[in-house]
Length: 486
Image (cartoon, one colour):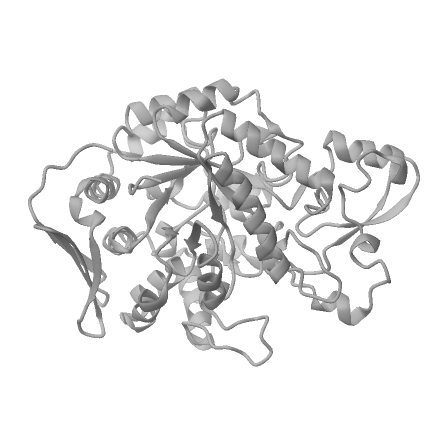
């Protein structure tokens, strides 16, 4: 993967078009900004119950966006990452419809997980309560199949997203077919969506168990044989993230967004410095994604009854959430928790810009921090344009995360790119992409409690970031160097 900033975007929400329209944006107004692009699900259909994360056909590009040939053309311009939704598929998929029509006689009977498949001896209350769940309730859906059979389906996320058995030959063939389709289109990196929940085991948490790591190892080896790197997406206790990073190509630094906000709220660098000292460097650094701002990633270990402490104490974590709600004038409160459907217990739904109260200097300081930490930075399309909360979309859909999933027209993009905060962000991106110091050695320098000083050096080249957290400002100094386009 290139050591340059990547863009994360939906194909149809940045410019309102298809793959070719996005390619034209990258060749035009956004030229030279990104070495890679993470295309959020572009499979058929893009407008299911979970914005493409519930594919009916994972090996088919939604025709409204284009075809595999268009994806292949895009890979000729930039590195492309795609999602592999390993845990589930849509209840509208041909495979599930066949299972519903024929039940246990279906060719696909072994593909879908039911309660009795996971608990063949029956499930006790204690065993069910032990299952880790990212949302309220049990991961189960009572269903009457088309043939009249009554089944209890395993559904980690929504009733429309039916979990598959990734250890069954049918599940293995299904996932292998997805990898082949992506490889043939020139995609060289995949993100494993919801992989932490992929393995189910009676009497265990069914989340990031040794068997889950073994599955990730097998899948990553298969991907590597096709020339594909693997990014594992996990929201979890920060020490678990360190453990995961030691076994995979790439992880997300999901602790960074709330820690950056916490530092700017308190004017203190202690929690950030603690994380910088131990964080994995094979990380994609983010401040925002298509999901919310994670809280679990810096809190105490929810799975540990002994209460292993987090990077931020509970009272300050609660204050951070309230600070974001206040900064967004209460808009994030309307989109978070029980206030919105499709909720996650561990995330605040809000654009990062609004979480900072639309403070340009604080926003750019957070982006500079992101770009100066070891790893490869990713910038979400709404964050690229310092976007505001989309309350109209939230009102229409009732889905909390839609507050940060605005549909930008080409005219809107042109207008937003003229804003000073966006232009300064683009300058930061170009510096991060091009200055040779970022290929060298990273140092965390000493400073006062309200300061953070980061330095990169490579031979005669160097770049230094000084953050004043109390003032919510940053300063960058660097050696002279010829800066090339991405």
